[in-house]
Image 1 (cartoon, one colour):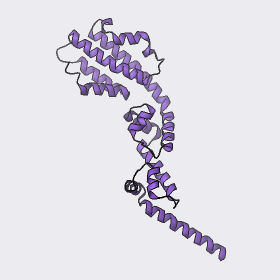
Image 2 (cartoon, helix red, strand yellow; image 1 turned 90 degrees about the vertical axis):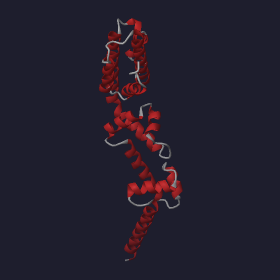
Image 3 (cartoon, helix red, strand yellow; image 1 turned 180 degrees about the vertical axis):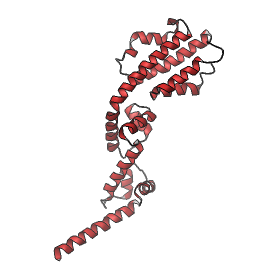
Image 4 (cartoon, helix red, strand yellow; image 1 turned 180 degrees about the horizontal axis):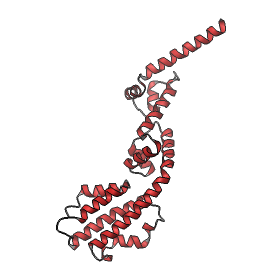
Amino acid sequence: MNFLSDAYLDAVKKSLELYDESGFFMLIEKLEKIPGGLPPYPAALTAFSTLSTLMLRAFLKFLPVNHELLDSDTLRMLADYQHFRGFNDAMSFLKETARQYFLACQTRESKSHQSYVGEVNEYIRRHLDGDLSLTRLGEEFHLHPDYLAKIYKAAAGISVSRYVAGQRISAAKELLADSAIMINDVAKRTGLNTPSYFTHYFKRHVGVTPQEYRSMLTDAHNTDTLNIYHSITC
């Protein structure tokens, strides 16, 4: 079936992974409205088997192991097109099963957003010197990077990248306050790798270079020390 293109199947897969119910059913509707009416048996079998496989993978990845969609009866029906009276009957089953999947995901989603934010924030704070890309965070928390970004922003009110930047800049400022720590070490300990990139990153967020910031701290410290000295001696 030439309409089961890689692009189409990727879109179905992504809609399942991102819990995009409306997107999923729009794609299924396109499949049901193919020109020429109902597909012949071999094509119908291929369409059902391909879609059911994508759905099963999503169920196994995103649902708890004891969920009813993973019981033996549902799994048997997902694997056996012969169980149905025809293509329309099979597609009705897939759509109803998908509705149950999306409902389960939405219920879990509403309960877990805040807990995910707390866990992600803790991970970020503990790994400032490492890879904190959405791809890496998605791997760590077993979530699609796009979905992680979506639920984080919905619950936290800011993007993951903005939180990461804030934490890295805060850590950098604290390290820069210690004149014994080299700029190169500050860059490595905040995950910004090289002094040149660290300088660019820091200036973009703070408005001055790390060296200028350190000089400002030194000048402020010297001024405070001088004021204290004058207050004591006057």
